[in-house]
Length: 436
Image (cartoon, rainbow, N blue to C red; front, side):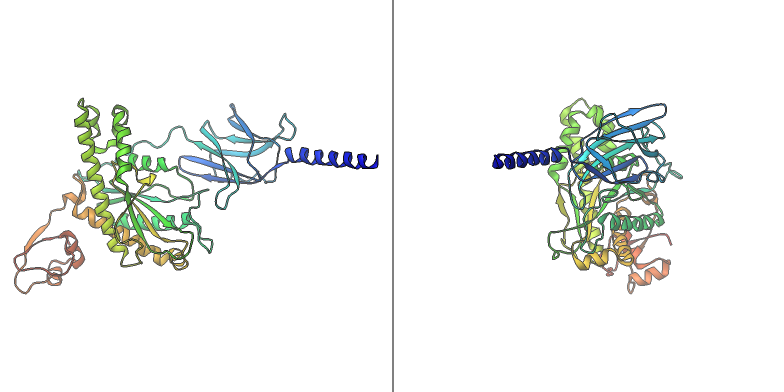
């Protein structure tokens, strides 16, 4: 009898334990708000995979999220102070017991996406809410001055917001390093007459990979530079590398676009209008292929020039342009490179990548490589293409330094406009002389 009672008590306790486990509370441990120019991202950090539902209310505009079997551990009142899309985040009474109801009081009606994320890197289970402006940025066309437009360079600082990228041994975040270098590169490009920089992200917020190339296209960039810091499972690898898109990826993307070229003609670059209206499929493919080949040629040539400059300021992990399957490089109409500025997982590289002085050197190397290409190959209709050079035939006893002094220009500018790789010139050689 006594033995039966013991067994009954044990089974009762065991059942209670399983029952408690089944309804165990999921804690809301953190809420992060990431305002961006076109959207605001909210990330809820939870102790377990979230069970949730949501709905919207109007007059006034609100988003209501119900977290099943949960409790909130976060002070909400001041979370949205720096965001103008969310007026307030607060709790409200839910109909169902054990449910935590959070209410977002919104400034207006936004396009909404809600999804959960499994644990990854430094983060646990999350619920992500993106509030997108319904009127997103429109196509921006620069008004040329005197018929001469600038060469526009799109600068993409990798990662951002709730996506830190790779994390170094000393806790360095890739997203912070890339933004610092990107801002320095922007400053250098904007100081160059005839060139203009466009930042894909200007602060610590998230931009979807597909959106990055769309922004670049809307800004009508001539060239796209994505800045990153590499990482590996060990600390041994180090050095910089420059990547261009894998040709197979470009071909697959092009096939998709051509299948519906009426809708997607704007994705095919300058020849998009012609391709859109071409009845002959073979001709459309030929035109698109020419566009693709030109874009790849510009990408590879500029990558080579950037590597040449990076070699002067840091070790190279790869001495030649590498080809990779990167989503951010997929647009065949925009010449693009991805610059890995070093390995944040390497102790020495991590130290350098956090140095403002080294960041400036990296930015200057990227800037010089891009500038050198576009000075030598300026797009039609740009200020760089309109520059008229004087000509000089090299005589006996003349050198680059003598000519630079005579025409009040630098040796570097003489080499740049004449595409010279050394200071050696020959008698009878005709040189272009840039404006002083």
